[in-house]
Image 1 (spheres, rainbow, N blue to C red):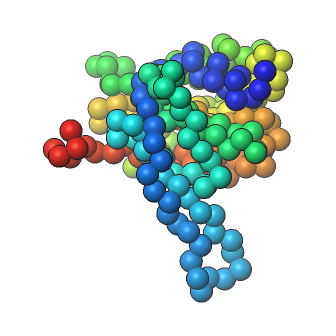
Image 2: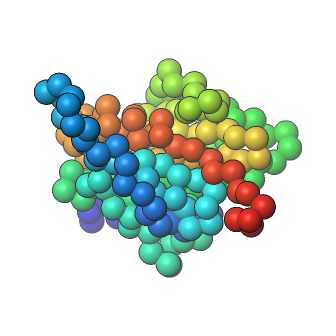
Image 3: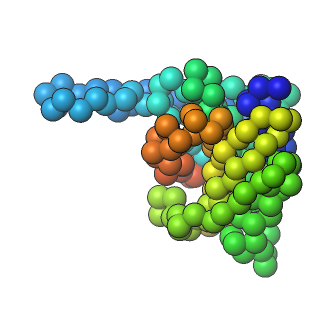
Length: 193
């Protein structure tokens, strides 16, 4: 079973809702800059227009109609064996971010063999409070490493899950963290509703 299939199976144990489309290409390399290499970015927006996230242009939308009820966004960087899924849920009175984050991470952990789970130091995604767990383990015989990041916005809890094969995760961890930090909830305008 591929890491993508394993990652999707783990994600199915957690919160869900959604659809996805790509809407923009931004941050193209700028002329006149020093020797630093700029990576072109795409901004992906959920089909319902509620969330968006930016990723390098090598990432692609992998959301299929049959799983659009489970995820807002589903992306992949197939050449590097990396995957991202975002799911959202309306806030329920009395449920706190810490509890939602623990439920999501524990659900993912339960789908792994010999799992290791640790809470990271992340406390914000953009301006919003966040709790993140790093998970490592085996699923269907393949090793996987992922970040499970829960974000609290005024009306929703969002879960951003990103990761893949251990070597690829380690080599691309900074980029993966930047992708998580690019997460935004899109405010709908009266004309967009």
